[in-house]
Image (cartoon, rainbow, N blue to C red; front, side, top):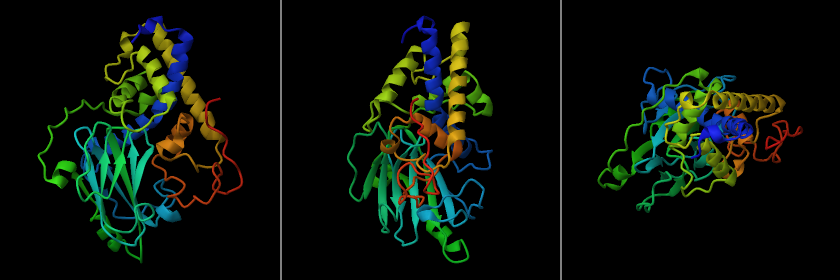
Length: 344
């Protein structure tokens, strides 16, 4: 790491703008993680890591929680949510057999989807699916149906289970059969040593509007190594190098108050530039198709990824939302193209 005071002010500002766009999905997802897995006073708390919480009633149209698998309208599915800490070992996600349409979407800390478990992807049969983070180098035990590798050490699961009939009771019964187990429990082997408990920063809404944004990003990048088995775009590596020059290196030790005033001022201007660029991009959008996807689908289009986090966090990819028949880059009405959101 170089001395941040020696970095050219123009470079500081440009790097901060890039960091805001790249980091925005991580902070938005951390906001959800904090409420659902860490803050037991939050109404959305699921019970911690490694626990499913199933929604007993369907999402109401217009609630922002719709977008059902297979193209259902909001109100046709029940949601399930869980978070996994993959630092010490993988987790096994087990699903029962059944012909009712369901999907469990495994999303990474930066919101991209690592994989899908459900009738449309893995089939209607029962299965035990291994979700493994970047630090795992083992072999799947017998009985594992498939392996989902992730680039981040923290991941979330969003389940959508289609309703049938006039009551959610039958669907809820299927949800209750979704199961989460750490690998050692599934395989009957000794438990690994626990990972150190992080000092989780308390989420505050104003964080995204201040230089403290980079403090949160520095903490979260500690769960997102560059050297894992999942390929990352070269743009990711390049930005991380420039962030390291500013003291944001994933160790969670970035301290804005220690920076010279002029460096802090340039960082603040750059963060405002990034925020303004995202606001312009989202205002120009004519639809939301294509904003969510796998890491391969998103690539290095970090602005598109940030727009997805801003407009529809954990929105369904086109194929799962029933829009897979539309040409790439088209809006839901099939006629008006989405404007490009890549670098300008």
